[in-house]
Image (cartoon, rainbow, N blue to C red; front, side):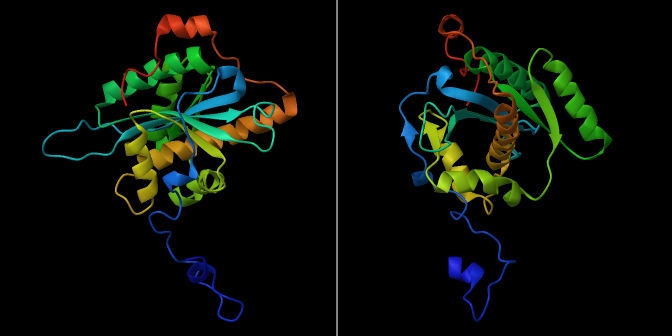
Length: 239
């Protein structure tokens, strides 16, 4: 496959060849953890969202709303190289009102458990700007950022794909694993691209946040264990 894309010294390659399913992600690249790492082992956590707004009915098969929570390990926790962990994925074919409620509920839970920030996509145009502003206002009190996604979907996914291929991405075991991993393995040829888009958003925000940490030496502060125990499992509101 690599030779097909890049060719050899004499013939060159075809740089316009589209990536096929299974080339950008394979589940065997990612170690599966029996439990999530301790919050103090993570220097930053972000939930990235890809938003839809049509509820599933018998006569339709709409796009999914996906929220992917990714953390970056502290360097003292994993000494050899920077590593990442997919902590949780929420996905659903739900109405706009339910989407807003889920984004808010998970932002509250993620903040208590991890001190996480939130990445909201902003579509081009005034309507996209209005929606992003509404979400950020709804998330007042959280570190919520709305950003216009640039580049095509594959280009945005490539940085996460590269880290996963090198074995630098862990996945916490959960009921959402199979649906999420199957979606990434099918990307970009699969019909469902929402999980990949949300993953790209979270990972990009972490890369930007990592630059701030390198400069300031600061880190996100997660809630205490007592806070997490009081709230119970923070992710019971949907897969």
